[in-house]
Amino acid sequence: MKYGHWFVKMLIMSFFAKWGLETYELVEKQMKKKDSPLKPKAFDPYKLLHIEADGSFGTEDITLAFDHLAAKYHPSRVDKEKVPYAKAMKRYDNLVKAHKTLTIPKMYNNWQTFGDPLGCLSYQAF
Image (cartoon, rainbow, N blue to C red; front, side, top):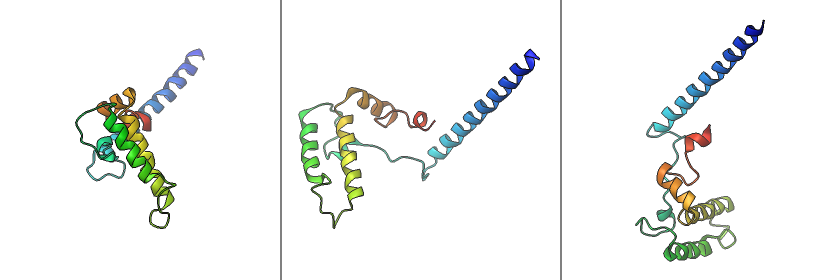
């Protein structure tokens, strides 16, 4: 009887492991497709901050560009009749994310390695 419980536990664990790997493979395949809705857009903090992509990190130019754009695109300063509040918030959040990416070493390294400042997207999805 002792070995029966062990066998059932192993069977259940192997089922979930197989299911997890197959799900991971499906997500990876879907993300590799050219026009997949799961494929994230490439994140380019230099483009978001309207500065030259020269590989610089933590410079004064980055901070100045962020300050200029943050003052211009802050949700409280945008004309609410022309730009919806949700869109203004998303744009501002992207500016903040771009600034953090180019000023915080860990986020910069994640962006250089994985293409996203938050780290590996596959790992986040799992």
